[in-house]
Image (cartoon, rainbow, N blue to C red; front, side, top):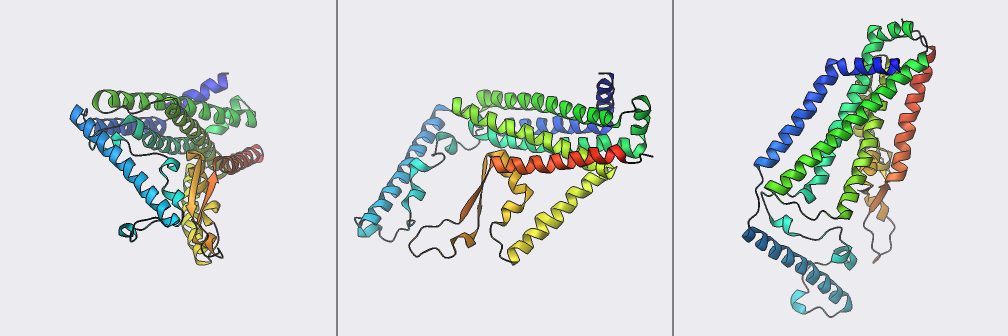
Length: 338
């Protein structure tokens, strides 16, 4: 327990951690102030007009769908024959859409919490992922490079215990910060929506979806923290983690993606870590590949899209993070630290 308390004090005393917390608060404050300044409470006339426009948009979608069905049945009037319709009318079926036009879509300059909560949460998660990775890398990297770990081992000469305490303290601190920050963050924008904007439809499904995104985001933040910690431990320096990420982005995400396109590889996005991160965070990610429709019979519908779901994406992220973390502990156990 004394070791964990000591590590917690060391982590909270680091200037880089304090700087990142200040930047987190600053980014949050700027986002909230910008949102508040650019929003206003809609008047009764604005709401009435927006509802009418949303109803017209929904009716237009239904009319277009019915015209598409009429074309398939050969009953479409000649006056509408030049209008374009997809070969598969289910593509424009309003009942199959993820969402239909609502009044908030036609209220420019009005912040809607129901519509903007998810994008705002994505923004917070992205910052927390960056925060966790950088703090995790600098926390252990600085100690290994400066000899702080050696001094700590003189007091507690158990390498696995010391490194495990560092990792556990890091993950616990990042988890607590992520939960507090996200709760305060969402509560602030909820208040803005209630007082200077539009709350929107906040039913049980909305909160379940938002909670699922938040839960997956917190897991991603913890994985990023552990990943930064592991790479810095393997490289014995904070810059090792930064260099590894930069090298991966340039060599694989950019270079390998270009090569895969040149050789006409099928489904190249499934080989990219960024695709799995997006699939895990959103629950499912769809990607386009024109080669999927090669050989499709004439008249057969093929949209050329394929999906990555959250389950295999999580497996990839866990294997990568777990493998590097296990390697870091194995190397730390036997390596000369002086």
